Image (cartoon, rainbow, N blue to C red; front, side, top):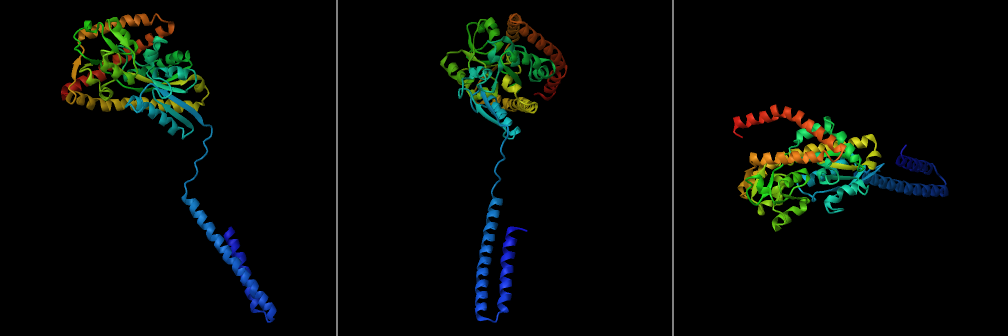
Length: 407
């Protein structure tokens, strides 16, 4: 029986008994005593009813209030550092989505704090921040670290390399992940695919590029092995984080730059300093981004937590590419129609020169180490196998579709 029922029953029953006793009293003194007892019990009954009403109000209030959140057990602290400006569309927002997804998928058990470039460490300090264990994950383009080992470039993009679908096939089913693990393991890291920008543009130039000779003496922002290729043609490649490119281009500190593609390039306003926009970019046909995880941290996770991080990274790998494909077309139209940029295609002669220079760069790369050689050979096999199929499937279909529809 509930407490309120006991209170009412006890008090009510006693009052009734007192009333019966009173009705049967003939002695004046006894009657007076019974009357006093009945009055006292009536007061107790009223107090009991008041207490019951208070309990009911408290219960209703408690029911209306939200439940306190459950205590999160086994909380995992994760600091993510990135090489991108905060809220920068595509690259920055993709890294932030990845961080948010880790929190959501773990139901708050992963306490994730995200830092954009410069908020905790500089963009190019992200690698060492995670390798040292000061942070748990970085989001970056791994070709930024090619100075540590040329093999890193293959896990973003290399000249005449793999497209988005091709590099996914290599990483997941062609031995790429195993080689990436081996390379990353030497630096205390475990790396995962976590985004892609697709085929990139060739760059922004102040002058028309009519031949390979026009690259001689050109100071251009272009990282990775693509920069090494242009160096073979006499250019001076410069590696700059995204947040520093515009000011260097406007000031004349650099003569040209590549960045990503129309969507991101429009936001950066490169057209204010350079009007010639060249395509296609030989240097980044499918720029894959990475989530680099501290290896000791990774090894300490349960299998389910590892699978969760892999799933979150893999999801962002697909979402980012979809977003770039959706946004680039409209951005290109605005650049042409609103900003008056001059869209130019690199000539076949220039591309042939790119190819000769790239061959020389790869010859040097494989001499670096046995691991560099094995990475290159595996990559080249994937390019031949997957590319051979793409030639008669995706490429031929798109050629015929665009011919028939006039796209």
